[in-house]
Length: 570
Image: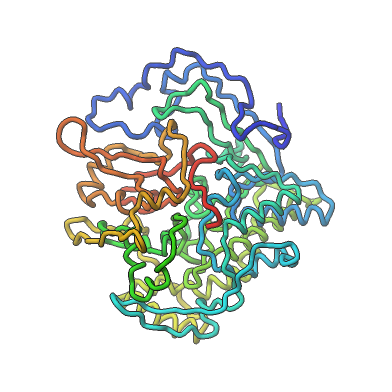
């Protein structure tokens, strides 16, 4: 039985069907939880502790209702919304009936969007040529650029010559969350079914292996992994094509990389964390990106700008820095990747919103052509839209990323960032990136940390409460909130690794690389030693832990929909 999702007048997680839950589910699940191991149990999420081995789940109705759409989009960021809007624009223009459903894990559209966005409007203008008449929130054009190299106490000014990627003439300073919220309103007015508060937790597949759609996450599960009396199964959303627009390091995209071997012919992705951009390829495990940011604000050339100001918000998000070399295969039977999920950020330009939007537009146009083709032939049940990747490689997005492909890896040489600037001046400004070689990255960010014994601890100054601040009071300003009584969505493949490997070799880097205070090593309640404590309710969904963990033991999965930060136009 299928119910039109748009006609459900209930809250985001109202039960879609009756549940029959037995009351005799007290015994703990067998092997993992009855172990005599001294390792404290941390992970209770069903992706690590299967329910079919847990007696507490016996008799629970696990049936899921399903909805059918033409296109399902995961993620209501700039890319996902651009794809949805373009699909409905084309459908309206050609008088076609195409059902487009878009799910977003944030409680409100734009609430998880974080960017210090200086927006290149080229992609946005393709979508909305009349954006000024429509009242889009692009209100602050860039009037001046200043670029410099900071030494310990001084700033060395660097001229921004015409044609360099850092030149922001014609761009706008925007609050990207507000722009995304506005785009959500435009999408709904065109007939896109937008569902905030629904976290896509699982990729569904047809029997032939092609993507069938996604399932939203179950709700009503206790912290220890047992079902509550309010347990509700997630909803299945089936589609001819599913677009994955989860943003940087999406947890469903990670599964698709493995399922379809999408990263077989590309470099490892590299990342930064956007507090102010701190590269996640650093080597010293004692480094704290958050505290580096606080120290940076006290630089003599920065502090005067901030003095007298008031801290009003805080957030953090990982961003792709791999560039062209790190883009995976973008299409597979039944689905495709757009936006910051595969990673179209122009690193020296420090911009990816315009390319994300264009990728969404191209994906929509390619999908629309297949859905409306009178001679459509597909080898799989889920449509394989190979045209999208071909069109992207013919577009200005690919040309732009190609010309700057060597700037980021050029900083890994013996001269570091100075070598990168010299390289940029010669091969980009003069030759416009047409050198006949492509430099490689130095590997995955998770492989870069050195053992703590080989590094010097970093002494950071105490925050002054005026310019620099402590971590927890900052996280409080992110509006982050999760249902406390649910399994931690920061899952561990092996609960013993944080202490036995990360703490013993790297002095527990997770307690420093997380910008939200999620990870703490606390003394054992009995005996000597430490255990890892995960404060999942603090998580701002930045994905840094999943990226930087040297053991690759942390797997970030979605919490209950609606949880996470509540950014107001960040």
